[in-house]
Amino acid sequence: MSDNTVPFCRTEITPEAQQAALRVLASGWVTTGAESFAFEQEFGAWVQAPYAVAVSSCTAAIEMALRTLGLPQGAPVLTPTLTFCGAVQAIVHAGLRPVLVDADSSTLTVSAEGVAKAARDGAAAMVIQHMGGYPVDGAELAEAAGIAPGTVVEDAAHGLGATVGGRPVGSFSRAGCFSFYATKNLPIGEGGAITTTDGELAERWRRMRLHGMSGDSWRRYHRSGTWRYTVEDAGMKANLTDLQAAIGREQLRRLAAWQQRRAAIAARYDAQLGGIPGLELPPRPATDTHAWHLYIVRIHRRAFGTDRDTVSERLGEAGIGTSVHFIPVHHLPYFRNLLGLDACGELATADQVFPQLLSLPLHPGLTDSDVDRVCEALADLAA
Ligand SMILES: *Cc1c(COP(=O)(O)O)cnc(C)c1O
Image (cartoon, rainbow, N blue to C red):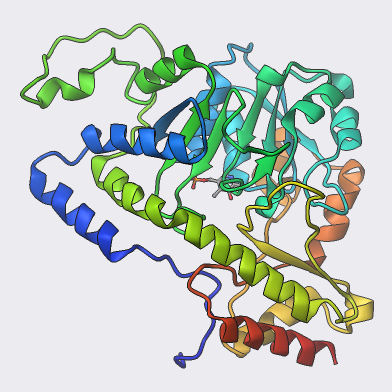
């Protein structure tokens, strides 16, 4: 590998975060504890959420948020088909049935019409997803689906830093589920959080994430703890460790600057790629803030002169990493079998846009000249 490659992603763990990890490792307490609680406070403050609960992953967060809706087994839950497979696995883990919603051809999220159509045989709840960082209005979609806004679970894995109606994603809903996976806007490596406006629900999730055990039972091996506990609720094993939390607290200090850098990179891509025929740029929300988790372009084969797979291969040969978000869920054999999707005519837009999708490198460590290199390589391929 030459040293002037442009990787699709590179996880930056700041020197301060590395120091914090060492401090926790030496402290004698490495699992859920004081660092985790401090991280919850600080993360909640960052997204302006009344409550935040730290968990092991966004996937676990979605499952917990769905479980606490108290729906009957097998109840139908709307989800985009153009999303990450794990978010749909979470619906299955919660004992519910995913009902796939087609993609919107412009935003790649879901539209009110798409949701209404998918809900015509009934819907009990809905998972929404801020695709690539493009903000989605859960209340508007809930209305279109004929369900209560409180039954919307936000998969905000891409939504950290976005706003809806001027308010930060995660600050105003029943359940905003975030991911701190290595590629995400706030990378820890692994980890997640749920934010909520409901304090009782936050307490319930705090018990649920650790086997359903009562209150402070994480302290039971600590000087200030006791071995006594009770279990009054179903539980999962989905706690965040203090090691991760300490890294997250330091990473959080850089998040605002990282978000600014992501937006600047997106603007630089826009400026240089705008004139290339057959290359469609990601849409921007009219007034709200885009989180710029991904910069997804669409390659229109005829006008561009080359198809997406070839473009991705050629860029790879030039040392430029790309990815595709996402393979539609209804293309994946497990879900096809589970949901019995032999005829997928109703998910026509996702089928149509999937072969066009290409995610370009977008991470705060990219330099302007890295971005220029990607743009020049794309322009050369189009010619
Ligand atoms: C990354 C991602 C997830 C899963 O996050 P984990 O923390 O790895 O469980 C869920 N949904 C979307 C859209 C994602 O990109």
